[in-house]
Image (cartoon, rainbow, N blue to C red; front, side, top):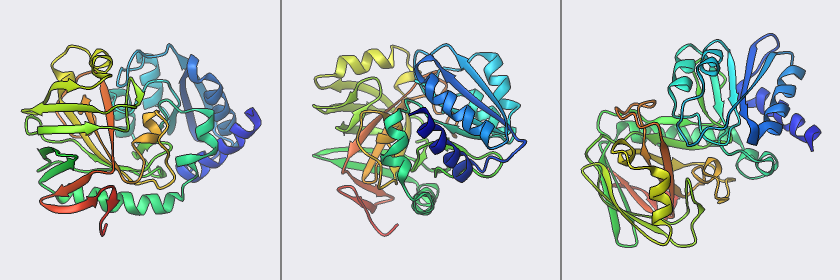
Length: 317
């Protein structure tokens, strides 16, 4: 299996990150993703890069910062890949590395199974094209409305810039998840009002057999109902910033599967996701030290009253 992981890693590093011989290449991992981290390191070594492997203590939540020496190593590297249990995507360490010109791919919750099937097998040129189209719609938009089964959530995105996570990070300062395929944006703080029905998966819980109905007022989560509501609130924590509506995203990867692992789930074509907590690393103003996403299957979505998704089918992208 390790040989297969290394072979697939070589292709990913070449195709998606354009890793070249002599470049400084850093793998940041933890004990739970040690084998995958080792495979990526070996792949980088095989491609002739100045490969380095750093294993840190497993973080306790998505969005928790890595130790300072890890953050400094990220800033000093040309290419950084992060196969970790919890996400480093929405951290200041990732943001600063990108500002210094690093090409960064985060892989929170990645499994060996995900290396061989699902989202990672997509045609990433196709993913890139659709993702960029949806990102442009978000950047030009002023208001989003999500409708499903009698629930509706509205929020402003006026003045905010959409972000394309295409899976292709070949230029300095590009970053995102691997596998990937999403267009996302930080809603304007304090503007979200209404309810959403999260029925796909939720970070901290996994697959949802029963949906969570989440009530939002003045941009903050105010109530959660459903069989796993208590579990979700425990994961989110008690801080006020954690209740911020931090992100709205649209999945653009037709190969992505519903697995219970948000890294793949939020990329599924025909889904959207809403996250709570930190948005300071992608255009927002809230620092919460946590970022939890919930996936909504087959919704209707409107941007400035133009319908862009009909029960999960993207309209005229």
